[in-house]
Length: 376
Image (cartoon, rainbow, N blue to C red; front, side, top):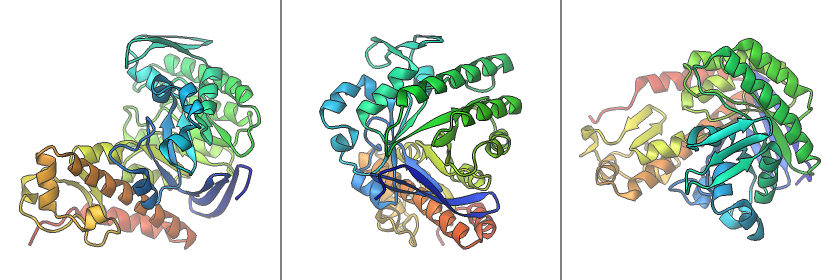
């Protein structure tokens, strides 16, 4: 395995890209979906199961892990990989989004952000340098710059202010990160729903010559067509030969359409959060297992799935578990959902390699449109 961070773009098909990121802890096949392990656990899943679904990398969160168990404690315990028993790559979000969305009290200025913990009310300060320091203590393989994310809709002046601040913070993060062999720091393009601001942000980050670039500040309240328009505006500005990560996205449809526009990496809590609330993702679209029509249906969610949760348990049993609020229901549906997300990525990669992504796109959309099949 390489001792450096490398991205190899292996094939393209229209806007879709097939690639591999190689790092000391493993290879990430792209397009890739990264299950979210916010506090060092992918909710309701054993990490061995997560790996078996096809995940090459998981995501952890700086904000949550710095509050508990604490970055310094994680470092003393051997780092996040050792603590959670995951030997493969980990990407850590900078914590900026959570600071803005979860903390009840915050004060933001050029130096960073002071905020009150949502856990115990204690005050903390996070600067760009401290964010990178925390991610280093955690031992993550891909580290994200600290940025300011503005929820949409927002005034253009407010979006511009946050974008410019995020650019300045990116420079400070780049200096703080330094040269860490085998690891990478990604910048985050901001600019809300303003095309000219997205372009300025991407051009500014490109000057830093980072190892990868993320598109942030989307899937925060805007319609899907706006998100896609921002990708079409932003991606041509970013270096073609480096990985592109769309943060916090999303639904299978979001991902399929974003791959078509050139995105390589995704993360989202949706598969596990939906699973805990009784919603399954399948080849035929979404299935609300809470619905009464499943109460006496002994068919599995998907008899053709490679996932035991989808193939070996009846809908009637899953319906019972969810309606009875049993933890096993959320576990099985989360397992199914993560497996489906990875199967979708696998299908996308194979289609790009074979030069048939447009056909795969159409076939997948057609299957979703058919919807779930009612019992005969």
